[in-house]
Amino acid sequence: MLVTLEKAGEILAKGSHAAITTTDGKIALVPKGKETLKLTSTEAVNMMFYVVRSTEPAETVMVQLEEAIAKAQAPDPAEERARKYREIRGT
Figure 1 (cartoon, rainbow, N blue to C red):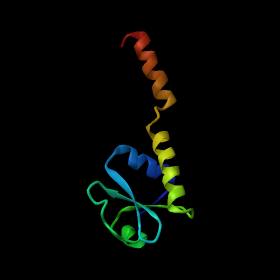
Figure 2 (tube, rainbow, N blue to C red; figure 1 turned 180 degrees about the vertical axis):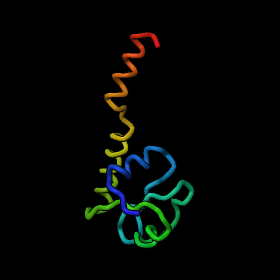
Figure 3 (cartoon, rainbow, N blue to C red; figure 1 turned 135 degrees about the vertical axis):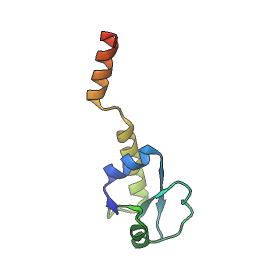
Figure 4 (cartoon, rainbow, N blue to C red; figure 1 turned 90 degrees about the horizontal axis):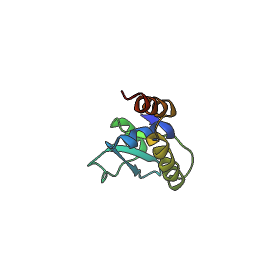
């Protein structure tokens, strides 16, 4: 399944998948424990793994993925305000 960088960051932030470079230079997200697989991006899609949609080299995409993970792990401003409100109100 093809995914955007933002969606890939969300998937990796959950911790159930790892990013690998396919033999044709794309980035695939595979379940933990399957990081040693050597496959093409087409094979990854056929095996129902996630493949990051990008035309840039794998090194550039990996850097962008790190940024997307950090963004996905950052707390939502609305949730942060609600948490602070609950702390102030004592509930």
